[in-house]
Amino acid sequence: MSGHRPLVLVAEDDRELRRLMADTLHPTCDVVECPDGRAVLDHLRSAGRKRVPYPDLIVSDIRMPRLDGLAALRLVREADPYVPMILVSAWADEGADRLAETLGVMTTLRKPFDLDLLARWVTLGVRQFSPFAEPGAAGSPDPAPGA
Image: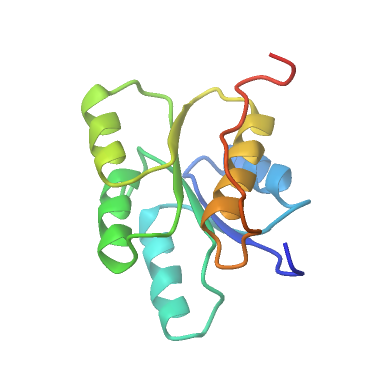
């Protein structure tokens, strides 16, 4: 990827899980940790004013205090219909999954999920949707290596 280091926002109210996700992604991405969806929107507003870099991808928990992941997804889509988003959730909710799909989420990973799978989805999202993406980058990550 032409020298650009992708920026990923990780929104998760569980500090330990947020830290684990950030540590997993850090070897290939810069990561900004957000404790909730409100922090994601604050970052996007600051990026719009060119105070901070714009994210290449957002990973967000669905259930969080202040502003949950689905509400954040709706508001992000109003501002930017193209930034890739990955949702994570401990709850299986078909209605939430359908809404997320309608709003263009890449995938929803169910907790507990394999952190390497998260890293593969993030890599795919950045490759496919970043303005710095390599031509012809496509595909989807294998659910399990070697499967």
